[in-house]
Length: 407
Ligand SMILES: Cc1cc2nc3c(=O)[nH]c(=O)nc-3n(C[C@H](O)[C@H](O)[C@H](O)COP(=O)(O)OP(=O)(O)OC[C@H]3O[C@@H](n4cnc5c(N)ncnc54)[C@H](O)[C@@H]3O)c2cc1C
Image (cartoon, rainbow, N blue to C red; front, side):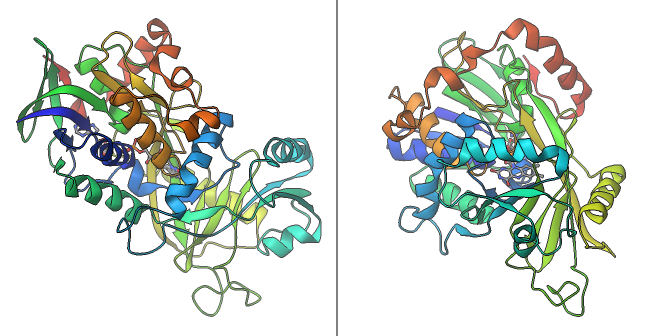
């Protein structure tokens, strides 16, 4: 089959771009190819599902703000229930971290409504599980939200298919070449041709580039571990003292060494690990699980009696912790949409719109431009490829069992 646009990867990034592209370019032949049978199997299905405006650098915050209205008011029929539900975030600081919390507050106080720097007993009023006196101050973002990631992801894919787009699962791309004007792509489900490739392959994005003969950007996938456990107490959802956990904010220290939040009657926690590793089906490491339990014990009155679930996912970062969105400088029909790090869910509506605009030759959408988003700031041209090549290649060879190859 021949397509105008072939999106590689059906995680949240590929799904959002395909959805927006099908809106912007009606009539264009668009396909998304996904190696797994289930889209969302990798980073997208393993996140903490949080929409927080104070987490990430200035451009990430701009992309989050540029995503809010879509998430609050998605198009008619996009999702059955609201995509966002109230959560709140509490960034807490110990004595030596006070300055970091004050800086975070100063940087973000005009970004989001009702942001407050809180002290003393107000911290434990907001998060009763924190040990009394453990935190000296905290930044409270009350309007941070939980995202229904499944509904958002499925909404993008459903909308894309309803516009005539084709989702091909169980189709791992294993070779890419461009002998003439069109790309030829070999997948485990058969060959395809396309005018343009959108590289939304998550942790594998550099490998896809190398397979296509494009210099990689130096993407580094970093593993993050998550555990869930029942709150201690007489009944599910009730910790010692009888406080319901459901209304707790996501609670995280300002240096990001431990985080926890309620999740469907349980508590979800992470040691906020960032272990660089080759792209793969990341699994939780027992050491990181033990670190999560120990850090929780130190900071809170919570005890982890039995771990209900544990998993790990890859957050893939470029050197400046910003995503790469735009045509490759050497080959404009190869479009990057990679490096979303720990922000790819909450920024997906804005990044999908930006990708679709640039893919169709339009300017950065006006609302995103007003927030300071420019094509140059996010474009792949900001990287020196020579310095990044060696690092990415070592990841590619380390994960050769799942690699794609250049023909
Ligand atoms: C523990 C954890 C917590 C997080 N918390 C948050 C949060 O609270 N908020 C937030 O916004 N973000 C969060 N993130 C980050 C977010 O999950 C990611 O940024 C986002 O999911 C990246 O989406 P993606 O589509 O780029 O990658 P993925 O979901 O990994 O999708 C890439 C897809 O490409 C496919 N693919 C790769 N190679 C090939 C190939 N050769 N052929 C075909 N298909 C291929 C893969 O199978 C995969 O499905 C978190 C991440 C983790 C791990």
